Length: 303
Image (cartoon, rainbow, N blue to C red; front, top):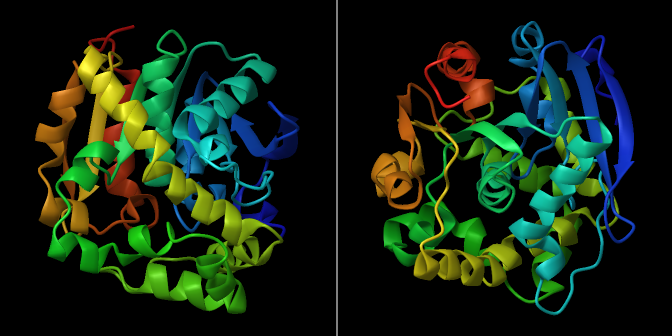
């Protein structure tokens, strides 16, 4: 589905990575490179409200994660390793290298923030600073899951069921899945531009999209936790300066202590809740910009 009208002046291309996978990216702006990664069940269109302002100071690279949007949706492997966040992070390194960016900032939401976390740990020389939106570390969220969290984030446990059960149910009405998952959050569907919402619904109707989405979550409940535990056991920490932001009306704020959890795994952390729910870039774009731009442009943060 064409969303060019949401990103006037931006260009779109498919960039090959590893194993025959291509990543759909939209690029625009000027200045230091900034990679933007979306969450579930969305695409790079989540950034349309903040991209015009960010493009004044940054060269933006808006990517669809593998399994989502216009990117490749390979069949999952037995261990779901081709959807591990290490693998998805490597996709983004390949994308940025192909565009000539060896050192860049990252702004990422939800699933994309989990990829960004792994990107900053596994490719520390590439990531200058990162902003993570409305997540706590994956391992912390699984280990601290309780009844309240499970009821609110039911999709975490639905999507990891063996194929093809969740795929079949999503494919029966992908538009309804998007409406239900997004519309049952604190703000309902009101914050979403109808064009963006239509793009999310169309993207999930594409062949392989439901499977890619499920494989992302299956990896997070398995191989990603193995990687996170190995990092914890070996003292591997996130070194890049991190700004963590989350919605004060959201589940992460209600069920976890995000800043405390990020301090457990990262060396240089700051952050706070914003007056919104989960979908920060679409619910509170001005509040997000007010936090992100000073952080990414400050000379007091590690160069």
